[in-house]
Image (cartoon, rainbow, N blue to C red; front, side, top):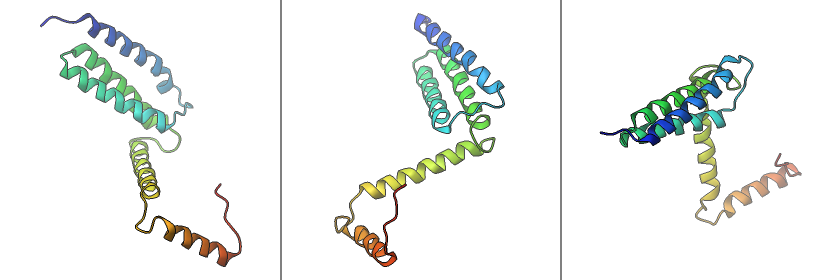
Length: 133
């Protein structure tokens, strides 16, 4: 099978990404939010799989390299603890946030009035409203 020139272009882009990400991994004081590194790591993995299914071996290898770089950043350059616990913490927090959003977005059987009434009753009993800060 003939190699496509696009395969080399995507490989070159991945190599440049790896080169530009290397200083972040080397800098022990760098802090990259998990909200940036985990999605980037995931996208790199998805691209690698996609390129692989298209027969673009070099592009797939380059994207795997980018995904590995972002995973190292997620593990060792995120605020907080180091290691895979960071990625697990991000996934757990994302799951909790998603659950909270779904609970808010889905109406209850009484149209959401039950929760509002319970909050109103609590505020009335305490004599003040709580700030939404």
